[in-house]
Length: 64
Image (cartoon, rainbow, N blue to C red):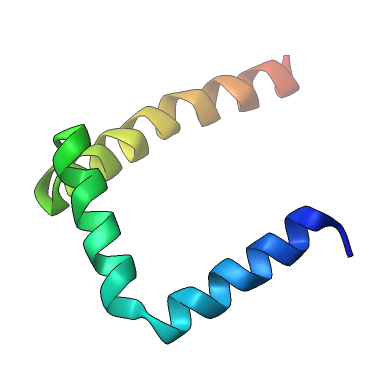
């Protein structure tokens, strides 16, 4: 097992044992980046909208 996998496993264990700390950290990051739940929902909708035309272009290229 690589060092990265070890650290990842430890982080996952810590997150499960201390969910309140994880939530505080996520909140702090959201505040620092200026994002919130409303902004994330808006970004998700935008990404879905952009995904449609890209998919169509990919299909056109394959058929052409």
